[in-house]
Length: 97
Image 1 (cartoon, rainbow, N blue to C red):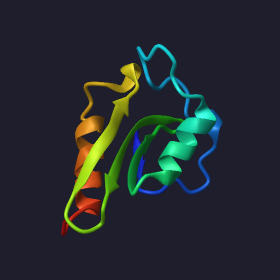
Image 2: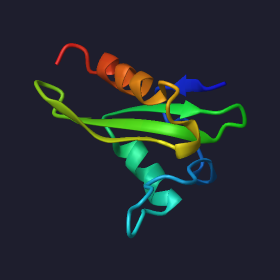
Image 3: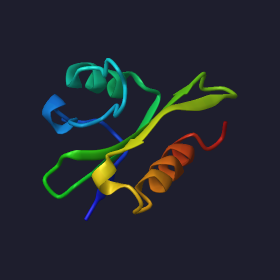
């Protein structure tokens, strides 16, 4: 079971393990959390234990444009529609641009 959140809230770095697969120098969990907190919009997918299993972010000028720089779902949770739902949620947050 996966639940979704549209805010970082009290998320802790230890809930952000296993991301940036294949990156030669992946950011530390603290940096990942800072990235999420600094994004214009964020959508998170969390498992029953509260671990983040997927995330998407958006950066926007708040007037006309936005883009999604990050979308990632852990390999163990791919193929379940989580990425699709994360994008749907972020686009919903950007409605009106």
